Image (cartoon, rainbow, N blue to C red; front, side, top):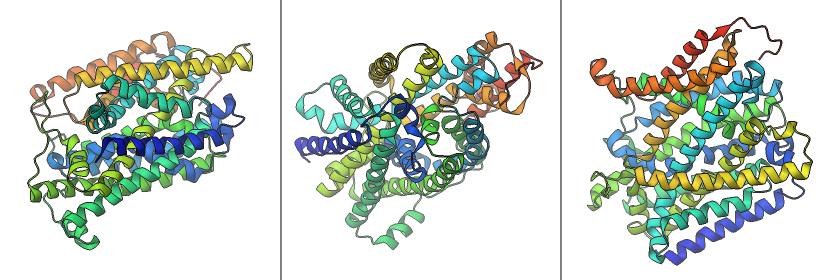
Amino acid sequence: MSPWFIVSCIFIYFGLLLLIAWVTSKKANNESYFTGNHVSPWIAVAFGMVGDSLSGVTFISVPGQVGYNNFYYLQLVIGYFAGYFVVSRILLPIYYKMNLVSIYTYLLHRFGTVSQKTGSFFFILSRVLGAAGRLFLAASVIQLFVFDAFGVPFSLSVAIIIGLMLLYTYKGGIKTLVWTDTLQSGFLLLGVIFSIIFIGRDLHLNIGEIINTVAESKYAQVFDFNWVNKSNFFKQFLGGAFITIAMTGLDQNMMQKSLSCKSLKDAQKNMESFSVVMVMVNLFFLSLGALLYIYAEQKGVSIPINPVSGKPDTDKLFPLLALQHLGAGAGLVFIIGLTAATFSSADSVLTTLTTSFYLDFLNVEASDKTEIQKTQIRKRVHFAFAIILLLVILVFRALNNTAIIETVLMVAAYTYGPLLGLFSFGIFTKKQVKDRYVWVICLIAPLLCYILNENSIDWFGGYKFSYELLLLNGALTFIGLLLISERNNKSVKA
């Protein structure tokens, strides 16, 4: 497929996003940017969250890992499903009751300023690293098949992608993102569905035969009950549930859209319908992964090798087949789906990072600055985070040698654990903490988890931590907060 054709598709897609941004950002102000004026339709928020949650990681890395991890990822997704109901029924009511814009304002009211800033810091760290990993994956593929052909260096190509995101998020914020993410979710889902159809066509399979082929393949094993394995069901299920609670319910990026709904009831409908769709969509992606490997085996296509590690680079299998083996139609579908994943994986992050830093660290809304001055500060912060994201992506590229999805989720286990501990302690106890020491506890807990993870095989008879490391991290934070707790004499409660 011609690089010029691919570039044309990307810029046409970007044109659609810019048109939506132009329409939705008319007369936009700070309230529009942060809350969407609380008029976002719940069904649009729910559908848009699909693209934001899946991103380029799911689009490429989930199908790729089927070759060595079967359908074990579905165990994690089942845990996600349980976690979304906890978010819907426990966390959303608290946020709506307190009328929050930044969810870390809860920590301010419950514990104090240091706790608020600590929570916001871990969110910012988590989202910068996570967004960098996701965007790096998608940008690497576009670089390989597009920008390399024009001699454009990776750093410039990523800067172009982030620059395009800035153009359509700079003014409208959440008000714009609700609708651009809806568009992107649609293209992303069409990408995986049509990719399955194109592979089935080349293998001479109809829809029923595609289902049977996937179900009867060696890759369709879902459950692993071997306790020592990282893919053990209970580790994956618990990890999935708490990843969702932490990475959705305690994450400003995901909650800011839900908090833009008209009411708590609408926000809960958004979250619970989204949870069902997520299970179905991930099953599509896993099925696509099985078909990719079946196709490669039947056609004698070799999996690309990572030049750094010398191991199979499974993240490159889908783009290789789509762009070089399945024909122009499949290539076009892949590019559109990947472009949707690329933009949806990072555009909202710029807005929500800005929100958290603006409200939790700078506390601009409580100042006596004029609205014009506040808007100028918000825009400068938005631009600064775009630069930070670019720099982290470049560092991430230099260090990458594993499947991106595993890297992103394991990073989350370390960075979201303190958030899990902080919010759990605030919601399920009535104790107050010595606020000035909270940041120390939230640094010690991830460090202890890292030490345990590195030595678990020797210390615990071959045991390997998986995503349950997040739960352990949260528990250690909770215990640490208990050690610095005191009787709660504050009048403000959750």
